[in-house]
Image (cartoon, rainbow, N blue to C red):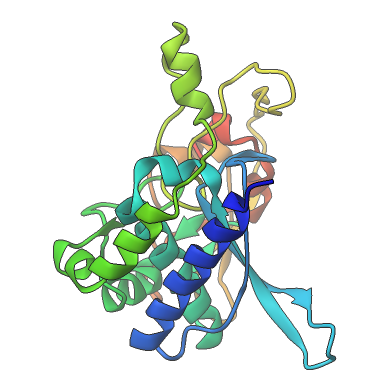
Length: 253
């Protein structure tokens, strides 16, 4: 019997403590791994606050999930996802609302924290997931060089990326890289992926901005898709929580 799984988790946990050493406000987590295939679309990682109840009665800890497919992409790419999720963990610790639309749209508060942890945000936000697609700065990679090397050494086993597998047998356009929380959209039409698209009517839905409390307006889904509508007070876009339940293949997560 091999202990590949435990070594992978140990390497991820050590990487997390390395992040905490540089950013002490980043909280402890319960680290798990598994397939990137998640309900509603593929994900490279997620941070789930207060997911685990500690058996000693001392409280709760968040869950930190890292997709097993990342180990095939190397320690640097895995660290990028760890830092992305550390941004969410830090935002929760500081009670900062860094996302909206059920955690899918990454706002400018997320950008500020991402830069603090050594990530470079995209120049422009994605319509569906905002500034999620942050990348690892070279200077940050140099700082975490021993951490990256340790994760490379721990890549004794990794999951096959489903999209790459499908592309290798001639199914092209299987997925689109949309960042961490959105991840790659699961191939449309595969059994069990839940990616059958829904048709949208011209109904109006409530949309809200980032104000506290939020300002609300009524818009059609098409009006929201045509381009962002910005609140003049908080500077955040109006978003419709109701549309967060639509399938990722419909609005590209």
